[in-house]
Amino acid sequence: MKRSQKIFIAIMLLFFGGLIMLAYDISTKTTFPGARNRKKASLDTVSTHPKDSSGGTLSPKSAGQQP
Image (cartoon, rainbow, N blue to C red; front, top):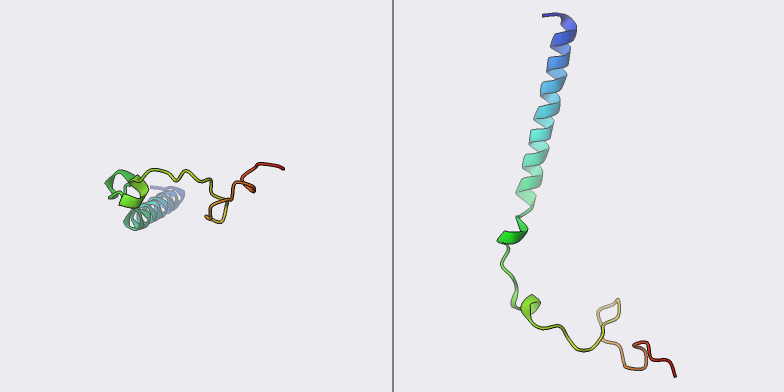
């Protein structure tokens, strides 16, 4: 085997080894979305009052009704 082939194989093994380590690291820090238990609060019906970007409810005057 030529020297350049040995270098290529070594770099290829390092690359794939790094990819496997990265995939394992990411997979240990995340969960499959279908495996999560749903909270009761998220299953409740949506509030009838519109909400602003800070999470509070808007008064009818500020909810888009101009005088």
